Structure formats: structure tokens, C-alpha cells
Image 1 (tube, helix red, strand yellow):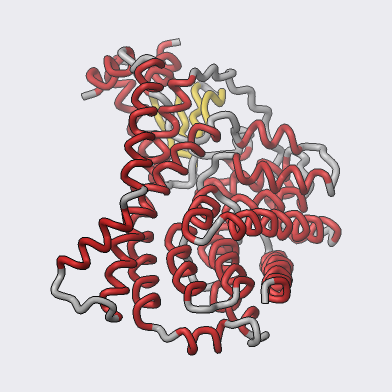
Image 2 (cartoon, each protein chain N blue to C red):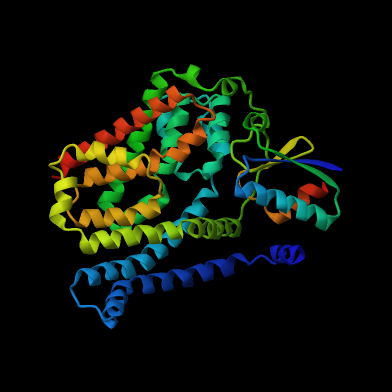
Length: 78
Length: 351
């Protein structure tokens, strides 16, 4: 089970990112628990500068803009 | 649907295809662009409108400017989308962190033009910069330049008003960002940040190096076109419609009286008027084109444009989360003064 956090104040792109993560996980059959982080102070602890950001198992793997689908699947599989 | 997208992702268009496709598009673009005015005139001539009337002037302006601005916007946004793929906010922060003020302000203002970031990232960006040791004034230089001096503003000014004005706007926009940031830095207002911002310690972030090919960069460009042109086109049309009305109906004598170089109070009035107005460069420039055509003074018009773009209420509301009201007031005062100076300087130089 992968623990995933989507960092972002709740803009359109953040929602789109979350949808992409969920869809990719469904495709791959990977079990995830996904949580949105909308609090700025909380977000900043991860050190990102631009949103949306993606954190998998406590590690920031992406920030700023929508992820690429290929990358997303790679991250979810490793 | 996702499997289709995935297989499409694998069957990425090859680099050669992209280059060939882009070359063809570019040729087509120039071929069409050169014929827009003739087409607009022909279209107006087909309508039951008296030639030379106010209405004819307005409609021609609209039919000429709409495709022209949208085509330009597409070209400029695509090019800039590719350029931006060389930069990221994280890299910009690393460049600016620990830097000195002065030089740092200059670097920050320039990086503000090319670093990709969307307005909903303004708060994380601000906090991320400050907590990583980028001086407050340098951060402000970045935040002022990023919206004000952008490719859309420069590209449209270049095409609609002329390269001299575009270059001047670039130089003065950068100056306002550099000087305002420097002044704010000198004032040592770190204590006026919201308290949580001062306490936050940014975690180390260690993103994997992305290796982007040219195909990735072109894709970034076309993604930017879809996103940005898709978002601003109605602003553009509204701006052009307003410009068309001014172009066709507003008498030149009236405007040059109000917005001409002789009316010294017009510069501060234009700035005050611009603060509550919120538009982006794409919507405001057609209006500016029409105003200039009617004898409005360049300094007044540029001050208005900078105020509309750089000092906007929605952005203040977002930044209120990290800045105290006092700091926001200082921000408005410093940037407003900078714009005021630009307006007066221009009116003095070009009249």
C-alpha cells in the first residue's frame, strides 16, 4: 500500500493531478491511500516551491504542474 | 481511455516529425498573418455598413485584431512554453538562495520572466523562497517581475504597438521590479511576515533530474498553448471589443485631453484606476492600442497597464496569507511609486 499525498491549495490542476494518480493506480492495480494537503505550512515542510506536488511514501517526487502519465506509472510501480 | 493515452505516450511522435510539422505550421502562420488586414477590410466591405463610418472603423478593428492577437498569442506562448522547460522554480530558488541583494534583485527580476509558475503557486513559492534563504527583497523582485513582464505582454506590445514600446516596457518593468524589491529589502521588514512563515523550515527536496528531449520541450510548448490560450481567449475578445469601441467612437480630442501628456494627474489616476481592475496582459493590450491611437500619452497608458497587471486585488488576497497588511501596504506603495515614476518619465521623454 502506497501512501500518497497531493500538495496544493485546491486549484484546478491539483484536483486534476489527484485524479491522474487515482486513475493510474487503478490501471496498475496498485493499492494506494491518497490524501490532499492544502495547508500551506504543512506543504512547505516538504520543501516544494510550486504546486501541485506529489509525495509518495514521504518522499517528494514531483512538483509544479501536471505529472506525465508515463512517469506517474513508473513512480507507482517502484 | 487510459490505455489509449499510455500507448499514445509510447508512440511519441518522433523528433523529425515535430520539426517538419512545426516548420510547415510556421510558414502557414506567416502566410495567413500577412493577409489579415486585407481580409478584415474585405469582410467589412461585404457588410451593409457605410464605408468610413464609426461602425465600419469599429468592426474592422475587431475583425483585424481578433485573429491577429490570437495567432500571435499562440506563437508566443508556444515559444515561451519551450523556453520555460529549461527552468523550474526549484532551480531558480537554488540560484537565488544565499545570494546578495542588489545583484540578487537583478537576477530575480530576470528569472521572473522565464520561470514557469502559476498564480496558485504564489504562496508556496514565496514561502519556499524565503525559508530557503532567498532574501525578502529578492523574493519580491521575482514576484513583481513574474506577472508584469511576461511573454504575452511583450509579444502583444511588439506586434500591436511597436518594438520600441515593447523594449521600453521590458526595460522599465524590470527596473520597477528590481528597484521595488531592493527598497523593500532595505526596509528590513522580515518581522512583518505572518508568524508561521518565519517559523517554517523548508524540508530538503531532492527531485530526480529530468532529462528532457526536444520532443518533450515541444510538447511542453503545445501544452502551454492549450492551457494559456484556452484560458485567456475570452479576455482577449473582451479587450478587443472594448478597443474597437474606443477606436471607432471615442473622439481623439476627448482622450488626449484626459490622458494626454499635459494632464499630469492622469498618471496617478490611471494607476489608482488599475488596482481594482483585474485583467491579464492579453485583455488589456488591445485597449492600450486603441487608446494610443487616440492620442493618449504613452507613459500614462503604460502606467495603467502595469498597475492593472502588477497590482491586483486577487493577488493581494492570496498574498495576505503570508504577508501582514502593513507589508502589503508597503508593497503597493513601493511598486505604485515605481510605476508612477515610469509614467512621468515616459510622458516627459516622448512629448
